[in-house]
Amino acid sequence: MKRAGLCLISLVLAACARQEPPAVTGYVEAEFVRVGAPLAGRLIELPAERGAQVAAGTPLFVLEHESEAAAVVEAQARLAKAEALVRDLSRGQRRDELAATRAGLDAARAALKQSESELKRERDLAASGFLSSAALVAAQAKRDADRAAVREAEARLRIAGQGGREDALAAAEAEAAAARAALEQMQWRLVQKSVSAPVAARVEDTLYRIGEWVSAGSPVVTLLEPDALKLRFFVPEPLLSRVRPGTVVQVECDGCGAPFRATVRRVASEAEFTPPVIYSKDNRQRLLFLVEASPSAEDAKRLRPGLPVQVTVAEAS
Image 1 (cartoon, rainbow, N blue to C red):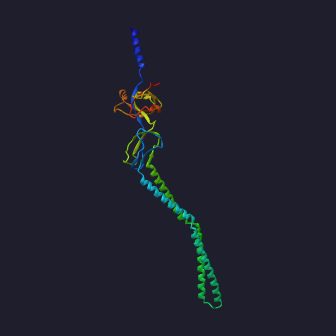
Image 2: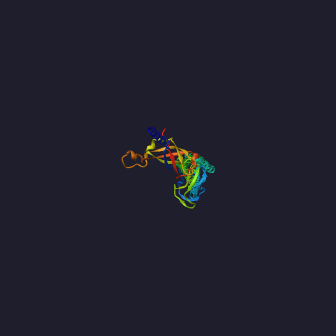
């Protein structure tokens, strides 16, 4: 009888030892890429289709952009005008203007030569007593005026060959830089009205229809990358010691086929549901900690966002 009792106890212990590892429930969550435009506008093109696989750079949608295109043309014209002014000030006067300035200098020199000859003749007459001193002073004043006119014409010729003043040239260059920056800004605004896929992914959803007004920053297309699915499940406090980043768990779900494995990436540092009572032994059973795990890229193809899963946590080794 005693031996039978010992055998019964041994069978119970063996059955306990063969207990299945504990399992917890969870669900599949997706980290979507919500694609929008930084500018507002009416939706005029939507080539993206729900369920389609798109490569990075594939056009997704286009907003109206007539105003931005016109602004680019205007900015280009302003830049061309500013750059032309810079070139004009840098080169100085044109060939015909320089020729006119040289002709003016030649005329001033000829006038000076004539006034000097007149002054010499007047001095000779004054020395012989045939000319008054007032007439001599007038002739000398005319010679001095013609000499000043020559110096002025020479200065004008030097300036004509040097181009615009440094301050005027600097102002023109600053104006050209401002026009160039304005053009870049207008071109950026135009580009933002045509949005392409930032990553290779599946089009999960489109949130607007053609003709609707899209606010700035509002998502228009929702993308799902192949590796953007993760498992979220809650582990009770007694099992927390068995789960840490890098732990491999087994996952099952309806319609997913054979069970597969996932690797724990994150364990929450705080409990999700904390009873407002003293942590007795019974209450600790009610503490749940969020755990996130990542399946392989191949296994992720079998999953859909929101799908319930059952996660088996292996015994601690």
